[in-house]
Length: 175
Length: 138
Image: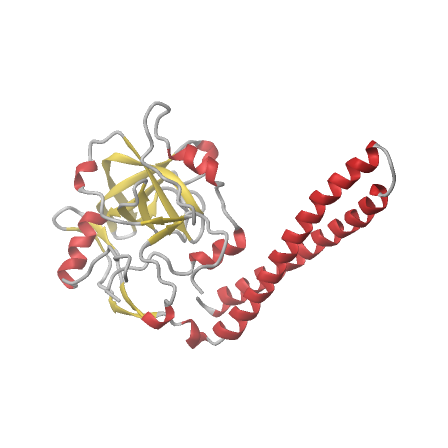
């Protein structure tokens, strides 16, 4: 097996008990960004979205891109990837720390937050199944999050490739 | 998966079996009731017969589900109870967390885990679970 982050882990067991959180028909509806735009999303029959490729840095400046994550706390949720980066300042007793993050906001007030405390480390992907970002944090308290922040995968993967030159995210069918 | 989470999993499976048993109990009573009403003549008896077929189908599905859950419970309990059975790999690289990592100031918070290939007999590659209905990782 090649080195690389596993995104499968234990979520399958949890989901088996809880059942589907968003029913297939509704899920497809939610993945349409606009009424008049064709969706790039194809709901997989086995409910497992195959991941391939990494969203390139060119997404910056795009309007809206639907993204999905499956986390330990809020399970499967759909959000919108902002075309802008967020400059985040965190306040500590010793001063401030700044970082730049990809920002994801949830659809509307009804759909609940895209993530909550405990969802960190989830992979965020887009409709065609490209890796988008690794979930790091969010605004507000840990019990509710208005905006979710993540580290862009195209940047993170370069760091991992440097350390593990043979690493590959795409597994062939024959593996 | 830690011991607490593992015990929670076992308890939640048991809880679900309990709930389904309750429901199937109610369905069984309905079936008995409808059987009595479907004997006889007239539109009411015919309606009861149709309804009976429907409820019987629901009951059969529920029993299949309960059997599957019981089997799942036995499998998980016998094969995954020991903490060492639940080790699926080890960390090979865990650099210190750095926020504002130059040159783009992103957060670097990663860990690379080498997975034990023998634990992944049904490995499907990288997928995102949209809310699975059946276990595929065991």
